[in-house]
Amino acid sequence: MSDGDGIEDLLDQVQGAAEEDRTSLRKVVDALGADSFIPNLMVPALAVVSPLSGVPLFSSLCGITIALVSAQMLARRERIWLPSKLLDKTLDSGKLTRALEKMKRPARWLDKVTKERLRVLVRRPIIWLVQLACLLCGLAMPFLELVPFTSSILGATVSLFAFGMLARDGLFVLAGFLAMAGVGSGAFWFVNGAIH
Image 1 (spheres, rainbow, N blue to C red):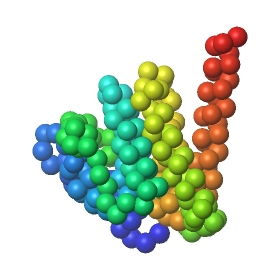
Image 2 (image 1 turned 135 degrees about the horizontal axis):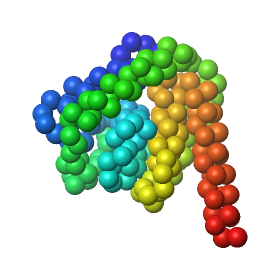
Image 3 (image 1 turned 45 degrees about the vertical axis):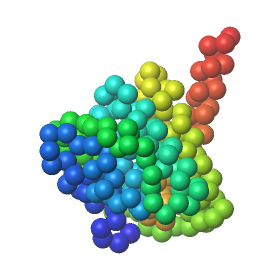
Image 4 (image 1 turned 60 degrees about the vertical axis):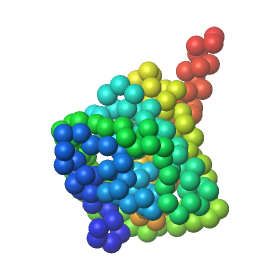
């Protein structure tokens, strides 16, 4: 991965947008670039894994953002469109900055270990399955808001997919599919147990 396009760099860009007391999603998208789909997919996914997930409805908003960005990736749009009501949602900049700082150490490690491998998993047609998986994870998040840890697990799954696409590292995509299978199996056994 070349300098300037790693996870730590993306976190720095988001942190640069948190200049005032509150930071809107619009500022985050502007900082990352409205034509930068993968970074705009990764940032809300990472945010759901962070302590910010404890903020009421935050996971739902991130899930909706992930779903919309993923859908537009599948549609091969050139620029991201998000509704104004979503773009105008704000978060306390202090909380955002603290969460970003906590994510930087693992981000730095991930940036170091990545390399281009298993590239078949980040090319068509499999890349469409990856984007569809991200869409499904995003759509599921609002429905799982009240179930502890589920949104964070889905966020981690989307993060793996996004990082794999960003770095062209199919190993992370493979890890994302395994994580998604694990979530699906867990949900099946949970529902099956509740019914019986």
